[in-house]
Amino acid sequence: MRSSWADSVAAAETAAAGSTANNSSAGNNSARTRSTYVPPHLRNRAPSSDPPAPVYSSSTSGTDGSGYGPPAGGNRWGGPRNDYNNRSGYSSGGRGGGWNNRTGGWDRGREQEVNPFAGIENAVEEVGEQENSGINFDAYEDIPVETSGDNVPPAVNTFAEIDLGEALNQNIRRCKYVKPTPVQRHAIPISLGGRDLMACAQTGSGKTAAFCFPIISGIMKDQAAQRRPGWCCFPLALILSPTRELSMQIHEEARKFAYQTGVKVVVAYGGAPINQQLRELERGVDILVATPGRLVDLLERARVSLEMIKYLALDEADRMLDMGFEPQIRKIVEQMDMPPPGVRQTMLFSATFPKEIQRLASDFLASYIFLAVGRVGSSTDLIVQRVEFVHESDKRSHLMDLLHAQKANGVHGKQALTLVFVETKKGADSLEHWLCMNGFPATTIHGDRTQQEREYALRSFKSGNTPILVATDVAARGLDIPHVAHVVNFDLPNDIDDYVHRIGRTGRAGKSGLATAFFNENNASLARPLADLMQESNQEVPAWLSRFAARSSYGGGKNRRSGGGRFGGRDFRRDSSFNRGGADYYGGGGGTGYGASGGGYSGGGYGPGVTSAWD
DNA sequence: AAAAAAT
Image (cartoon, rainbow, N blue to C red; front, side, top):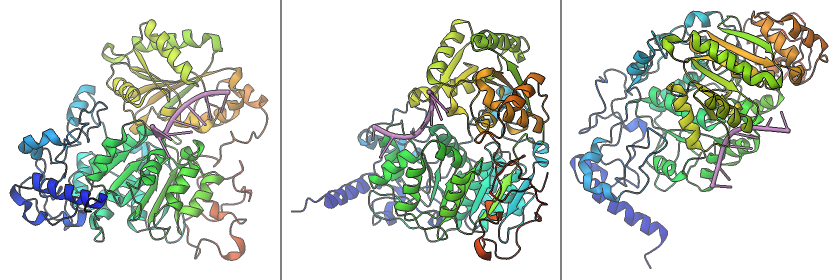
């Protein structure tokens, strides 16, 4: 009988093609396989009927971005697609196509790419500040950078020096990026040169663009991409990140960078209905941004194949390992169908570079270049750090005092955005409740809230509706919330790196910020690293904290800063213990001006004695 | 000890 699954799929294809493709340029379309998705390298023929969004003159560049979107009825479902992109949380676009067939005209109009830049101008107006996406480059000028490895491509000083293609350049202008940040200046040439990269850099340093630009540019130039029939989709690039919010954020940024390049970016994470994500994937995907759990799910369902992956980026790798994602990550990278290191191009980003990440680097990367970018704020004083001794029982009233004071000097009578970190989810809820009871509009974000609640809280905070956000560590890393004026460590974390990440939520993009920590006897183990860190960043260290630090046991393992100084880590391949018998990872004396950096360096890798070329 | 992440 003729009713196999494949046949019914084929039948559905035909039907769908017939129903959606009966106007304009459908002619050469009908023979296409199940998806009418057009791979990037075929997209540069001008779309005959649907002009892509506004005022974009495609001009030069052979691989220009003018041709986004399939020529006709890109979606075989003809289904509602308008909501998928703007992920507003409550997208109503749930059910299948049906009704949409009646409104073909409307639907076709929506085929054009949603302009990710829409509304940006307004946002700037609202805040009344000179720039929003820009970065205070002077503050970045003196951030130390280290590279090592074989034949490191020279850094660039301007975007113009890099051949990213006109479409991408246009988006860079739209983003108002004037000048590359240090991590971008180094990482982009490395990636464009086809090299693997291990980068120690924090979010806020321009990382996302650093890995997105080469990926997008590479995909645009790629001639090998091809579509295959079936339910499975074949992304060309994969970006993994630890939290849902971070994935969403990367997706949003990547969409801006890829606007009108024809490169399609899709995000997949847990906590949201998978069907929507599946439909989005079916419409075609070049760059997949995902959290590990949801991706494993998709792989097991065979809805995504990694066979075509050319670019792999792991963001916040140390964080992912901390969260126990190593098995999932190894499964994704090593045990599915992803091309091996050397065939694909891999970029590993991590704020720190401990042993586990070094192992990951050895396993995932091929003759990579190591790049360490100093901590943002490490050599400047963008973030004013204050530590106050507050007993547990006094914390709430103390916080209240801070908030009142802040309200008093608030701009335009508006409460400045304040991010309050607490240790537990329960603690977050109860503090939020207490704040609200006391007249401070607050909301909270933590792992016990539904994804909808989390997204709503984040929006409400960003918009200033609830200018106080009480958060657990889910919000500590990577989230880019503009205009956070004050970070309060209501409960200090146990790990100094977490502290660094938390305070990094303010003072973003070169703006100044304030970070206040409530310290008491429960935080004794943090005293020394905290005092060290503050000293390092030219902050005033209270005498009582120094006393605490002196008292706390010496050399406590985990809390010792791993890289020493301003970097999150150093290239462990320099360790003599690692370069067994001359067959080291460096071909020739390569490297950079990093001469054997006069001693101080205790072979075992990573002791406090490590010095860098800048020390 | 807690948090995060697939259902």
